Amino acid sequence: MDRRTFLQGSLGATVAAVASRAASQTAASPLAPLSPAPSIDSREVWLNRDTAPTDAAAMANHLATLTKDLGDNALDRYLVDGEVEALEREFAALLGKEDCAFLATGTLANNVAVRVLCGENRRALVQRESHLYRDEVDSAQRLSGINLLPMAPDRAVPTLEEVRAAIGASENGQYPMRIGAVSLESPVRRANGEMVPLARVREIAELARAHGTRLHLDGARLLLAPPSFDMDAYVAEFDTVYVSLYKYLGAPFGAVLAGSKADIAEARELRRLYGGSLWQGWMPAMLARDTLPGFRDRIVQAHGHAAQLIAALVATGRVRDRTSPDASNIHLLEMPEALAEAAYQRGRNAGIRMRRWQEGVVPLFVNTTILQRPVEEYVALFRGEDGQRETG
View (cartoon, helix red, strand yellow):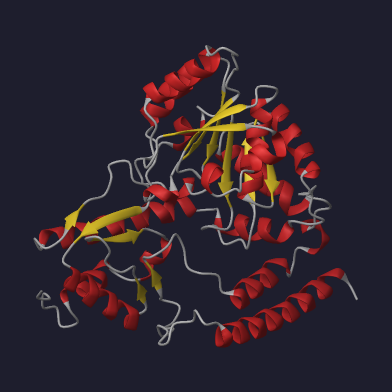
């Protein structure tokens, strides 16, 4: 049997196995909703998350289509050559860096980056609400001996004074220690997708470099930024940049870390040290490469759709836009609970997924699925099926 036939046969078996397991788990799960929202069709819209949820069968079938005529040239060996190398080249160019490495997870990307940038100076400044500080089980401390010093509690954006004070306290204490790295997450998931503005990034970068400190960007959701975002200028301030492949680029897992040739060479060595040298990574690489061309244009169009929707809702006088001026792809819409609940229930039946009203607001996530229907349909969702404004 040749490799191409083997790949397609294996994918078919995988689809069947995944579908069977998913069905049995859903039936048995005590957390499954008593009345699940009906599945509509390919026009389903997900305004409650960064992208549509994974459809295992559709993903596997799409991968089979992509591999049909590629043969062995697509395959990598321990993440060398093939689709992985092509993905790395494309992201290095996109992010304006000399080199780029594929990694299995964002957690690995963040930890490798901070370890490379810190070198022998094992202290790093981070936002308290960042993924590196809150969601990575102290891996920087436990695996690399890097002490993470948190800033900006309950906020996305550290002040320049916070950074200056943290560096000063570390360098001028009884036992002086240099800060090896500053890691900034932007957008910040725990702060409704708020971004650290470019002006602040530049201020922090200038201060950090004056002290010999290097910068890492956890940009997992970076490509979801609004049309006004200047990615070239933004990423140029950082020594290393991580972007996720699965949050909105169609891959089942994976991340990329971009930086200088020397930094990425060390990152690849650490990838092996951490057990991250997968036998093959061509599957997520191929799927992400398929989504990447034109993605920026599509997300810009999606933001345009959202802007029209929000303007129409605000014009009714019953909705206020409470979105941060530094927001990425999450808008906060203040409205009466009755209006929000009616829209949620209608959307649930129409295949337009939304989050429920909480503490006065409904978060609206911008992603490319919003392009599947005209703006008028979303406006009608809030006004009522007959176009009449809801009461309450």
